[in-house]
Amino acid sequence: MRRAACLLLVLLAAAWPVAAQEDDSLFEGELVEEAPEAPPAGEAPGEAAAAPASEEPFLVSPKLEWGGSFESRFTAEWQWDGYAGTWGEFVNPDTPSLASRVAADLFFDARPASDFRVFGKFKAVYAYDPLAMAFLFDALIFELFSDFQWKDRVFFRVGKHTIQWGVGYFFSPADVLNLVSIDPEDPTLEREGPVSLKTQVPFGQNNAYLYLIANDIFDPSEIGVAPKVELVIGGYELGIGGLYQKGLAPKAMVTATGPLRDIDLFGEAVVQYGSDRTYVRAGAPYEVYRIEDSVLFSGSAGATYVNPDWNLLLCCQYFYNGQGYESFDATLAGLAAMAIGAGDLSPADLLFTGRHYLAASISWSKILDSDFGLSLLYLANLADGSGMLQPSVSWSLLEHATLSMGAKLPYGATGDEYAPMGPAPGFWISASLGAGKF
Image 1 (cartoon, rainbow, N blue to C red):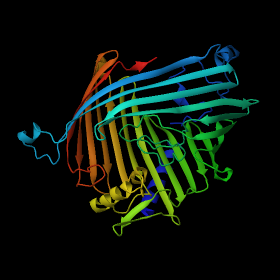
Image 2 (image 1 turned 135 degrees about the vertical axis):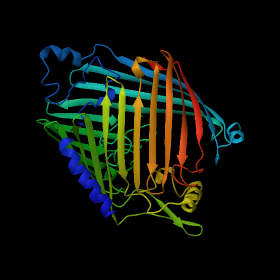
Image 3 (image 1 turned 90 degrees about the vertical axis):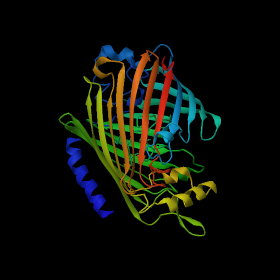
Image 4 (image 1 turned 30 degrees about the vertical axis):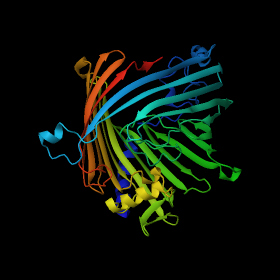
C-alpha cells in the first residue's frame, strides 16, 4: 500500500499545478442544461456580482419553469458462456434476453426573487429485468432544495441535492458525500445526493464550504460535518476537505484539476481511519468482519481530451482502492454470494473488490457530420487480471430515434470481477425511441 500511496502522491503533485476546475459554485453546473435562460440566483461574488446591471432581470423568473426528459429503450442481448469460437456455438447463444425500459424525469425551477430559488426533480422508471424475470417500478424525489443568501457574502443550499466533490471521471474515491458511486460503465449518469445544508463563503476567486449531512439519521449527534476549501491558483484548482459523522470512518480528501495544453489532468486522494464496508473471509462456512483500526489510502489520477470540432472525447484513469481485498478469488466470491443471500453483506460492500483499476474510453459522435457514432470502453481490475472491452456503434435514424449495437468482451478467470462467468462474450442491439427533452 505504501508504494501505491507514494505513486498517487507523485501523480497528484504533478497534476495539481497544471490542474479543469471543479464546478461547485452555489448553484452547480448540473442544472445548466435544464435552465439555460436564467443564470442561477445568488451566485458567488466574482460571478453574478460582477455581471452588468442589465443582467439582473435574468435572475428573476415571473413564472414557474417546468421541463424534463423522456426515454424508452429496448435491448436484445445474447451471451455465450465459455465460447470457443465455433459456428455451432455462435448460432446457439446460452443466454438470450430482451429488456425494456421506460423512464422520465420532471423538474421545476422557481425564481421569485434574485436571492431566492427553489428547485425540484422527480424521476420514475418502469423496466423489465431479464434476471429477475419481472417488471420493476421505481420512483423517487431525486432533488428538492432551495437556494438563498445573506448580503451577497454567505450562500446557502438546503434540501436534497447532488454534491460535486470528486473530480474523477470513471472512479471518484474523494466523492464521500453522495449516496451512490460513479458507474464506470455509465460515468455521466446523475448520482443521488443526501439531505444536507451547504454553506458557501467566497473569498476572492476561492471558496470555503461547510456541509451538514442529515440523511438517514435518527439523532442530532449523527449529523455529518464536511468542510471543504477550494483554492484557485492561476487557471488551476486545489480542493481540500474532510468528513466526520458518527458511526462512519472519518475521512480527509484532496483533489487537483487543471490543463496541460489541450489535456485536462485530474487527481484525487482520500485518507480514512477504518472502513464503512463489511468484509467476508473463510470460516464456517464464512465470517464477516470490519476494518476499524487501520489507516486506509485511496487515490486516482487521470486525463481527458476533448475536441469539440471533431466531437471527440478521450479519457483514461487509474484508481488505487485502499478498501479492496488483498486477494479476491472465486472461492471468496462464492462466500460473498452466500453472505449477501443471508443478509450479512450488501452488494455495495463488493463494489471494487480489488486494489488496482484502470479505465479508458474513446467516444466519437457525429462522425464527419454524419448520423453515426463510435465508442470504445475498457475496464480492468489489474489485481485479479480481469477486464472488459465494450465497442459500440450508434446510428441516429430520426431526430428522436437511435439504433445502437455493441459487444461485451470480458477476459479473466471464472469468478473474477469483470469475468464472473469466465470469458463469456456478449452482443447487444438497442433501440431508443421517442426519447428527448422538453
